[in-house]
Amino acid sequence: MQVSILTLFPEMFPGVLGSSLTGDALEKGLWNLNAINIRDFATDKHKTVDDTPFGGGAGMLMKPDVVEAALLSIPAHQRGKCLYMSPRGRPLTHAMALELADSPALTILCGRYEGVDQRVLDAYDFQEVSIGDYVLTGGELPAMVLLDAVLRLKPGVLGNKATHDEESFYDGLLEYPHYTRPANWLDKQGQTHHTPAVLLSGHHAEIRQWRQNEAEALTAERRPDLWEAYKQRKNNKITGQS
Ligand code: ADE
View: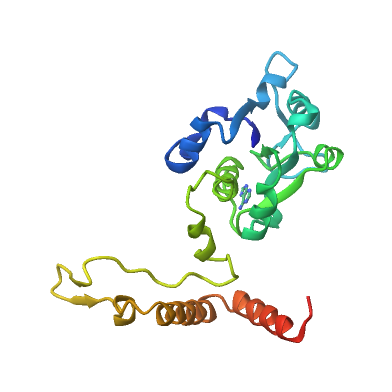
């Protein structure tokens, strides 16, 4: 996957994506990264990239002509889907990550200041994506979050397909709890914590059922929105609706 980042801070990349699985994948050439400095495309001697908003208001906006020039420096066939990280975008979900993982190329615009002039977003069909209902100082961390979620879905990045199949959101449920050795763990406060006996039983059908029950209970308790959607899908399956 060819990834182009449009940013005022190219030195932030690959950042965390340069370590661990995404870093190994980058080294192996499973994805390529091109971090483009938007400021290189400013045309005045002060290298101006922002200006005040028409109609007044606080803060500065990134100029459409400069953002456009940075975008057009990427050959059209290498741009793929154009995304703009913004708190007012569509919320990033596992389903969106799966869809983006199918794209051979992604171009991600990272805003700073109050944002970007609307016209360049419209003219080049940028899809706005949010990583949550909070405001960060810029789109660079959100771009990394999105890329981590997408890249781990690309073949060869995790190296173990089974991991995908049982993780949270694969089936619309949160993941059941996990335990490893020691089976009975004595903490430094003098408390012993036992592993649920069923997991030590070697009884695979019972283990599967226990995990399913745990995942359902956890989802119902923590995420009523996901739980309702899950039950709805189950019902539709039973009644044959899509
Ligand atoms: N830029 C600033 N805050 C953001 C958020 N929550 N999601 C995506 N981009 C952002």
